Amino acid sequence: MRRLGTSLTVLAAALLAACSDRSPLPTAASPAEPTAAPRIVALSPAVAVTLRDLGLEDRIVGRHGWDLVLDRSLPVCGDQSGINYESLLAARPTHVILEWGTRDLPARLVQLAVTHAWSVHTVRLLTLADIRAFAADAAAEFVPDDPHAAEVVASLDRISDGVDRSGAGRVLLLLSASPPAALGTGSYHHEILSLLGGVPALDRDQPYVTLNAEDVLRLAPDGIVLIAPRTPGTPEALEPKWEEIAANLGRLASLPIPAVERRRVAVIDDPLALIPSTAAVGFAERLRTILDAWNEPAP
Image 1 (tube, rainbow, N blue to C red):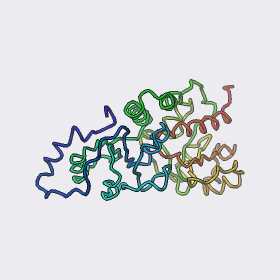
Image 2 (cartoon, one colour):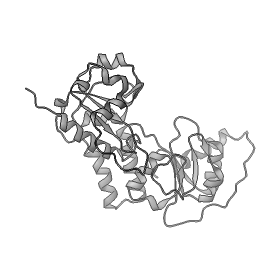
Image 3 (cartoon, rainbow, N blue to C red):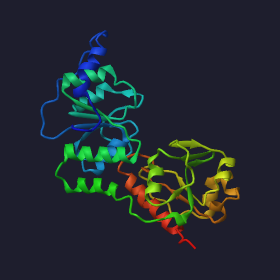
Image 4 (cartoon, helix red, strand yellow):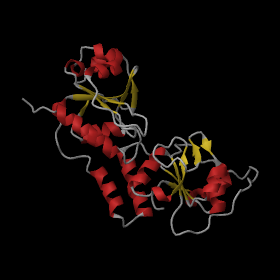
């Protein structure tokens, strides 16, 4: 795979050398037999969403323990706390794609990948550019001539539509209201708000910022968007009444800020709204609708 992150094919020798002082670990299965179609283990909920959206769900043979979109019958091959090697071996993958942060890959994964000729890739999915790069690279690797996959990638490029929505005022993106937790610079949600021509109320150079009521009072946002994903598989809620929104805001609903005084508070409850993946397109569409409703021409 050309650009899907760190390839074990390149790093295997160095990583195995670093682990050479350890006893060899036994393998539990024979190398995967050559196959025309890739067999992918998606050890990341975000990776799974993007691969599904690209039309690759039928190529996935193993999933992450906190996966939100794949068939429940697929074996769980691990999560951020560790890898289930028995399930991973039974899945007989050709590709293993995971988010592993800055940690070294587990030595056993390295050894098994070399033994079984797996292609292992770690991906970083924090910014919109990261999401777009992974989607494009996965499409180029697995479905290079598929028009649907190409359209999915292109939809990420169309998030920015050139419309000035600054008339909506300064918008605060909240993950929770009690205590207040906001999305700032460095989060792809903040990027999308800016790309849509909105004005972020928070400009701290942090993707996740814990606030208090006094901080929100000082920010005095003109609008608040509360991102509160509902349980996957449950129907989208009806547009909540102000009383319900105020209850979700808690103490913030009593603050003398423009967002509350003008009742410009919206809720995005998409189950995938916090998954850094191609689901960002759906989040952008919902946020665009909210900003358009609040947008007012300059006097």
